[in-house]
Length: 101
Image 1 (cartoon, rainbow, N blue to C red):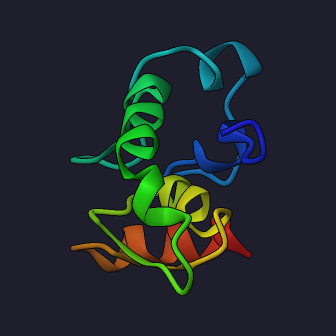
Image 2 (cartoon, rainbow, N blue to C red):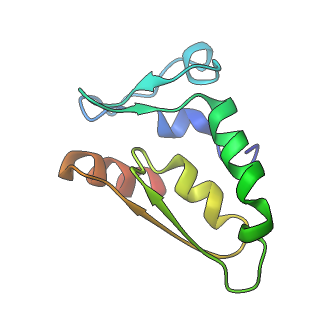
C-alpha cells in the first residue's frame, strides 16, 4: 500500500483538487461521489492481506467490483497480475480512469 499514494485517489467526481494530506491519509472512508466512498486504509490492507496468496500466483487476475476511485485495483495490479475494476456509474468509471493514468 505504500507504493500507491492514497491522496491521488481521493478526488471526487465534483472536483479535480486533491484533499489535504491530513484528510487523505486518515484511517477513515472518504466520500468520492454522492453515494460512494473510498474505503478506509485498514480495509484495503485487510483485503490485500487476505488475497495475497492469490495475487502473487503466476498470471494472477483480479476483479475489483465497485472499484470507485481505482485505488484497490491499482494495488492489486502492483502484485504483478492483471487487475480489472468495474463500477456502476459512468462518473465513477471516469474518475477511476483518470486516477489510474
